[in-house]
Structure formats: C-alpha cells, structure tokens
Amino acid sequence: MNARILNFQEVVNAGRWRPELFIELANEYAASDWPMMALKDLVEESGEAISPLDYPENKVIYIGLENVESVTGEALGLLPVDKQSIRSRSKVFSPGYILYGKLRPYLRKALLVDDSLGQGICSTEFIVVRPRAELIIPSVLRAILVSERVTEQLTRHQTGAALPRISSKDFLAVRVPLPPLEIQKELAERIAKLTAAVNDARKQINAYPNQLEAEVGQALYVQPV
Image (cartoon, rainbow, N blue to C red):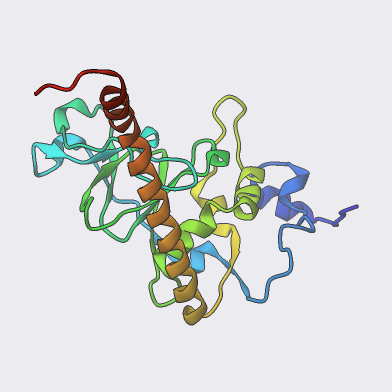
C-alpha cells in the first residue's frame, strides 16, 4: 500500500487532484546504480514556433506524429512539402533536438533529429528539447524516454480522456537515471548496433516481394533467350 500525507498547497500548486500524481510507486524508481535526475536538469526546452508561411524556404521538412514510429523513433515518409500546405503554427527544430510526442504518451514516440533531416518544423503536439550534451548523450536520452519505466511515469501525468496529453511541465519533472558519460557511451554503441540491425532487417523485408517474384519466375516460367 502506498500512502502519503499532503498539504493543501501542494494540491493547489499541482492544479489538479489525482492521487497517483503525488505517490511514488515502488517500481517507478526501481533499483538503479545511478542518481535520478529530473529531465528539466538534462535538457533545454525550445519554445520557438513560427507560422509556416514565415519559413524562409518554399519547401520545408514538416514532422507530424504520424511521421514517427513508436519506440524505434524512425522517421517515416518524410519529404519536403510546400509550406502553404501546412495550416497551423509549428515548432522549429534543428539537428540534435529530440521531439517527444505529448499526445498519447503511451505510444512512446520520440525522434532524435539527425543531420540528414537538418532544420525544419513540426507539429505542436511535440515537446521539443535539446539535451545538455555535457550531461547526457542524445541517443541515450531518446532511448530512455521511450522505455517502459519512463513511459509509465509519463502516462500517470497525462490529462484528457479522449485525447490524453502530457504537459511540458510534467514532462520536465519526470526523473530518469543518469549514469556517467563513459557508461552512456557504451550504451550508445549498443543502441547504434541495434538500430543498424533493425535497418538491415527492414531492407530485407522491403526487398522480399521482388526477390520472391524472381524466385518464382526462375522456377516456374520460361526465361527469355
């Protein structure tokens, strides 16, 4: 059983009453060898936003929630689009930023912007942050954000029934383990190997239809002379 005595001011400051927001679950801070740090101490949130029509180029990379694969964070179907086709104010991102999907956080959508994407704009349904590189490696932080334990914390703070979201304030208050940079580098290498393996597997899957057609053609049909 989890219990805690609250003072009235804590409830007022929180702005809402949900018991789970004030009680740390036993598995939330499951044994870690490393200190726990609030995200607000590890990242800088970017609030920069513009009207798409004010973007300097006619074509722009625009990222919506549908362009980010759950867990893996792969960018899906991204092509430059006419800025006139984007109807709403958008947030600005640059390489090294992480875009975290605040709508339905249980979908575990977080994308690390690399140099291949460059600068662009994204939906306001993302929380845009820049990791403090002297404290945490961006690829490691992205992986932490989509982990089950951190997602459990985030979903506890979501609000709204039909379209649950997490606020920037609650997102930045979430605590995560912070290992030394040497340990982070080892983890980053393992993450890179996993990502490469997934990409190789995806290429094989995409090539399968053509390879299958070729095998069937060679085995069953007369080949042209």
